[in-house]
Length: 252
Image (tube, rainbow, N blue to C red):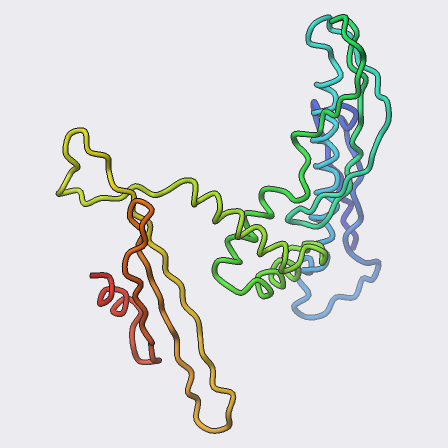
């Protein structure tokens, strides 16, 4: 059995209409016990093909809207095209980015315009979000491996890409401090609410010598109030201790 996949776009510039994507499945009629549904590799191939078509339709829609002059309504001419690559959650895609010649109705000298300049990026927002989410829970290499194996992210977006996404998210959070205070003690009139930021981290220390396992976990925490870091606390957690109890004991 074979499955023919096609998509249809509306109001997508030159991509409006129906487009054949790919064929999923083999030509063999023999099926093994439990051979149900599409495989992971077939799903990744399908999602990557759909991503190519969808990104191309987005680019065509943006280009078509930008080709109309806002002042006189004339249609702008395309000067040339360039090929741009973008990392997405379902693989790397290539986009044809045009450059258009500006209209002369304003009396100014013509210049080249790139309608996709503010939209195109090296990686999609959804990929950066998932990379940040996984990178905050696992190591950067493990997060990159998960993205490669399950979602088909291109191998060139490795642990360095995950690390960059996590650091960029942390930088944005540094410029957006969390305002926290006790509800039973509201700030006085005219007194600014103190900005509190809590940070916790942990790591494992593993014994490499032969013999009984002697692994343990180190938990650290710090509190920042109005830009000043308070006391930094740490705790060595054994396998018998509970994390909530450790956090409650050292949060006072």
